[in-house]
Structures are given as structure tokens and as C-alpha cells.
Image (cartoon, rainbow, N blue to C red; front, top):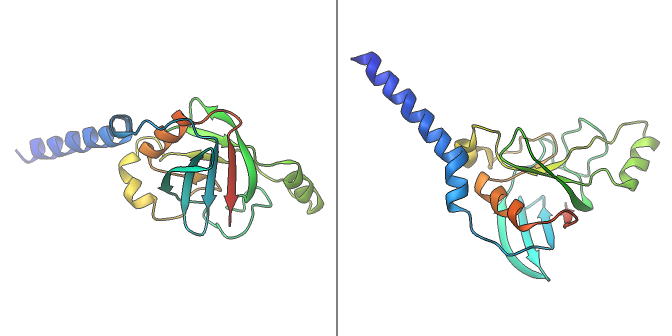
Length: 173
């Protein structure tokens, strides 16, 4: 009898995890018109979407594990600061959708070379790790990425569906 209860609980937890990881984000996302600018305010842990200068929506974010200051080298755990563009939508990310930021730009590369370091790369705006979307309420309160900008799975569904390659992203301190 106890084994049946444990099995039932495990199966229930599995289906709840799948629901919050895959189904919930798609069912509850808002349809957002096309955006032309993303603004990230690191200190406030906020990502905002704009269209023609009009604020559309904002989301709470998590940053790199060492979020203060601009990213200067690979492995520093910092999230870059500056003006970038969305340059790729990742089709098979380890996270619930991912869109790449054009870091490093030419200035980032020059600064890294002068310092004798590699600038790093593959900085993304992404959702939660695959199969862990249900942890979003906890993960969004801490800085846990390697320099990326993490949002909830519902948020990345909305963001990814409303941007185009070339969308400007401004990352402020």
C-alpha cells in the first residue's frame, strides 16, 4: 500500500513538472505585438519590451552569478552591458527557448585582447533549464547563470514570439 502511494506521488510530481515546464508557458503566454527594443536593467533585475518607444511589458530576471560590472572575459560570470542585437534563436537549447545576444561586439573583443583574455560568448536570454520550469519562482530570485539573462518559461515564450533577428537589446548596469 505504501509503495502505491509513493508511486502515485512520483507520477503526480512528474506530470506537474511537465505541465509547468512545457504546457503552462504556452497556455498562459500573452500575444505581444512585434517589439523593436529590449531594455535590461541589471540592478533592478528587470527586462522590458518596447515598440516605437512605447513600453509593452516587463519581466523579472536572473543574471550571471557575478552580475556587477560589464563582462570582460570568458568564465567571469558577468552579464555584459551595452548595446547589442538579437542575432540568433536557438532551436535546441538546454533551456526553455533561448535567443542569443550579439556579445561580444568589436569593442568587447578589443578590450579582451588588450587584457590577454578571451571575451566569451553565447550570451542568451533564455527560460528555465529544461524540465525545471516548475522551479522558476525560486530560480528567478537568484543569480545563477553563467552571464545570460534568464526569465520564466512563459516570459521567454512571449519574448521569442515577438522579436525578430536584429532586435536591439540595451543592457544597463
